[in-house]
Amino acid sequence: MSAYPVYLVESLGAPRNHHAIFVETQDDGSGTLFQVKGNIQNGMTYETRQEPKPDLSNTFISKSSLGWVRVHDLSRVDSVCRANPPPAKQFDGPKRIDKKTPLRRCQEWTSETIGNLKAEGVLLDSRDSAVTVSSS
Image (tube, rainbow, N blue to C red; front, side):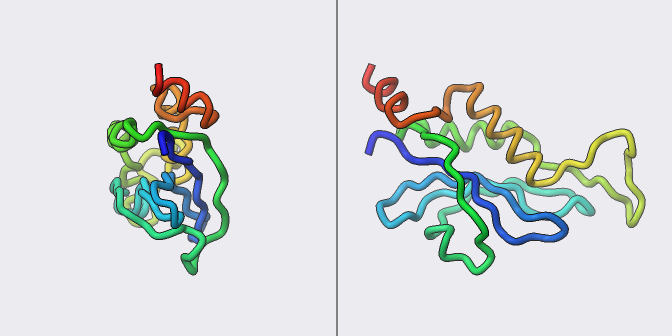
């Protein structure tokens, strides 16, 4: 396999569902999950880990295709994710720290990171473009 499929994975969360980026690296549907975890009361942290097929999780809601990443660019996915700071602490108890700044949670971080992966040429629209680029 010269390119891996990349997905937006949505799982049950509160008050909003959780979003993460999943790169399927194995034939059994398992792969690497890239996400921020925690909450905006304390601040979130970045995490990457090996995961079984996301559909097997009890909290799984959906998996939508985002595109492809070349096999040799998998480490770049992690680098781009790490370059996007996780959402910081945004509340002090029940009070918002900065009411002028929009709230930023896992959904916003994931959306920003997907845009960054595309801008860096790591996330490609089609497998054909991933294979063509990697063979040139």
